[in-house]
Each structure stands twice: as C-alpha cells, then as structure tokens.
Amino acid sequence: MINYGFRKMTTDVDALIRAASGMKDAINIVEDRFGLPHRWLNADFKNTASYTPKLEEYSVYYKTYSNVLTIRTVAAEYLIAMKLKSGRQYKSDLSDVLGILAEHEKRGTPITMDQIQKAVKDLYGKWESIPKTSQAFIEDVMSDGRFRLLYKQIVQGEKETKNLLVQFEKDYPGVTNTTNVDSIANDLQKKADKASILDQLRQKKAEVEIENTDKKSPRVDDWER
Image 1 (cartoon, helix red, strand yellow):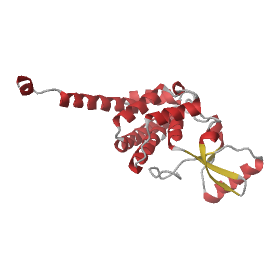
Image 2 (cartoon, rainbow, N blue to C red; image 1 turned 120 degrees about the vertical axis):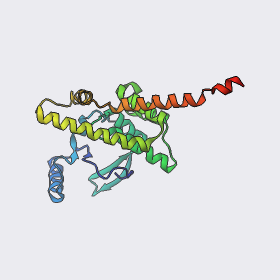
Image 3 (cartoon, helix red, strand yellow; image 1 turned 45 degrees about the vertical axis):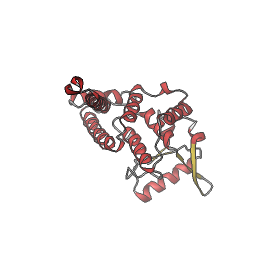
Image 4 (cartoon, helix red, strand yellow; image 1 turned 180 degrees about the vertical axis):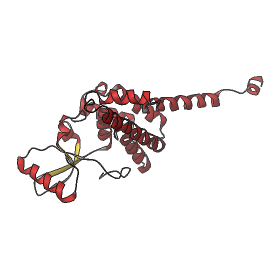
C-alpha cells in the first residue's frame, strides 16, 4: 500500500510479534478505536506458505515508531516471489503480481524474469519451490506482456472464484480448510464452466502465437512471385 496504487486497501497487515501480551492489548485497542476487523494485524503470517525467515534479510526498512514497532516493506521482485509462492486464485495474489509489473513498466523500471527467479531463490532456495501453477502463470504473463489488460481480467476471475467458495462454504460448512481450499476452488471453477485464470492466459497466448504465425506466413501471390 505504501509503494503501489493499484489497490485501494488491504485486508490485513502481516506482522511478526515478539513482544509480550502488552502488544496484543495494543492491537486490540487500535482495532476498537478505528473499527478494524478482527485480526487486522496478521500475526499468523509466520504460518503461511509465503513466509520465510529470509524476509527480514531481503525486506527494506521503512520506519520505527516509539522504539517498539518497526515497519518494513518488500521490494517488488521479492513481493512477486511471495505472491507466486501463495498463488491463491481466490485472493489477490495473482492480480497483485500483475499490478506490480504494470506499475513498474509505467515507471520505466520494468521487472525482468531473471529478477523474479533470483528473488524466489533468495527467499525459498530454488525455483521449483514455487507451485507449478504459479510457475506457468508468471511465464505466461511475462511472455504476454499486457500487464494492465490482464490485471483487470484476473481481478474479475479472482472475484468470481471467491464468490464460488463463499457459496460452497454456505452449502457445506466446515469442509474447506487451508489444505484443500485450492483444489476445491479449481473444482468449483470447472463445475461452473469457467476456465481457470491460468487456462485463460494459456488460451490467449495460443491465440497470439497463431495470429503471429498467420502474419509471418507468405501469401499465395508472394509464392508465385
């Protein structure tokens, strides 16, 4: 939110809490004072797929408050690496990747695939640690290059997938959990006759390749000449 403007808000702030219960009291006071949702400060961040101790090494210092609270941000390619590691099609992970790529392209500081791959290796050790769907996603969008256009499409796809999950949870309460939510989301997309975000990108990539091939193919009169 500090570095980019493509999203109006975030649902929570990731945090590592090392203090005693006094910090939790402070969090609750801020929550009540500003009407924030419960768990607005995501202390469970350490248990998510995208967390790694390496983040402290590769994040960027922003500000310290009252010698107690230190704020750090994550540089673009490392933030993309984190989003790819999570790769959730029902949240803003994939659209965030495109938003970051689009803003840096607009600023004249485009992010390369080499930078992203290095960031992944710095944080998680190897490129293969990223889910295969995320690997295919970033390879396809980097090849396509239409970050702003794809951003709008992915945002819409994420909303539709989230709505499908919300309805599923109403129909089957208690079934979804952190280990099965991704597979359930994919199944719901198929049953709703909606191509997954990744499939949509692959289809667009294939269409572009066919179009480029047609342009390169010689016309009949060219052969006759």
